[in-house]
Amino acid sequence: MTPRVVIAAPGSGSGKTTVATGLMAAFTEAGLRVSAHKVGPDYIDPGYHALATGRPGRNLDAWMCGPDRVAPLFRHGAAGADLAVVEGVMGLFDGASGMGETASTAHVAKLLRAPVVLVVDASAQSRSIAALVHGFASWDTGVRLAGVILNKVGSPRHESLLREALDGGGVPVLGALPREDGPVRTPSRHLGLVPVAERRAEALESVRAMAERVRRGVDLSAVLAVARAAPATGGPVWCPAEAVAGVEREWDPAAPGVPSQDPPGRAPVVAVASGAAFTFGYAEHPELLEAAGARVVTFDPLRDEALPTGAEALVIGGGFPEVYAPELAANEPLRRAVAAFDGPVVAECAGLLYLCRSLDGARMCGVLPAEARMTRRLTLGYREAVALTDNPLAPAGGRVRGHEFHRTVVEPGAGEVAAWGFTHPERRAEGFVRGRVHASYLHVHWAGAPGVPRRLVAGCRQRTAARVRNGAS
Image (cartoon, rainbow, N blue to C red; front, side, top):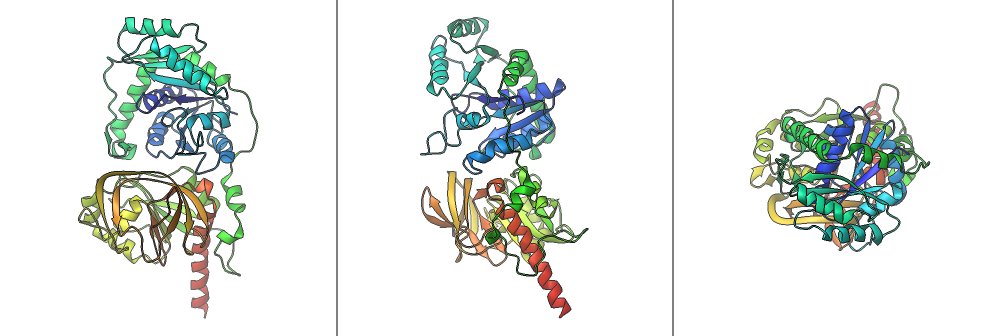
């Protein structure tokens, strides 16, 4: 397995994103091929990781994709890399609510047999840092804590006190980042950092600043040695074609006589929303669609006035339409095209809002009989769900695991036919199924549910075959 290191912290806000992204950029600038990974369902940090490395940022989610897929997905993403840097989520041992270590950074580190470097906010403490690091090092002996990076160090004297306290404790100090450095400009808003797609030039400067800070304060050779000391392991490599081919036939809606593959030169066109308003997506999704036989094209609802030529299905994922509601409303030609589209439409979270009649009073596509608005309440967490009816994503009874993350509300919260029945952590109906349309707040990682892309593409083939038969008759 590729040399690898996990960047973790005692809790959120300690600086692990700065350190992890800075390490990725610094090693890339030094000529290494770096693979970037993020623990959990985060969509935004992988965009910065991709800028730092020039490779797709990928997520490792032991809950949505299952623990058995974590290492194979890692091997797939890290293929050809000299080094992999994995940014953790929350605190090192913080997992899915009520499920112990499941999906925590520690869980993923153990699945990868990867050493962990702990980024510690050292402000307002000196000798006490030794107790903190000792606690994290000894809490779970299955996690190898290979080093610590001190962040927000107040002065050279403060750094000396911290190093003295940690000396001889068994966890080496690999770097210290001073507090007085000018802040790296990474603006945030209601769901975290502003995505790269909305500030690409400024984001590049932010990544360069992170790399420079890390170069000045971290022993890069020592971090690389930690990564290279990770044990060599073998095992399967996740393959999108094999994932799609291995799905049970019950997820495939193709009727008898409908080809499971397309003739040469003919593949269903799946149009995926992109641009500044729709930035959330997993790197494996287009890979799975293509493995299922589709041709993936993108469109920007902020700029494009027509859907891509030949589009047979639409995927409108997550993002920040609430930030761009007036601009989305102003693109009336595309809103009308989406409303008139007669193929399968799959909408997640931001896509759900876009299909509503309005969003914060701005006119949207009007596909769904619902209104959407911003709220102050954050809805966040893993969900287990079951499809309540046959739909473009799943057959009735099909089960998935997903994630909710939003500060908006849609009224009503479910249609006459709901998309999902949530079974964990609470029971409720959510989302909309209206003929060809499946719209929900639930984000699903398709690597954990490869029946979704296979069913979507098979549905396109079924519709095409039906049109051919009707035309022939």
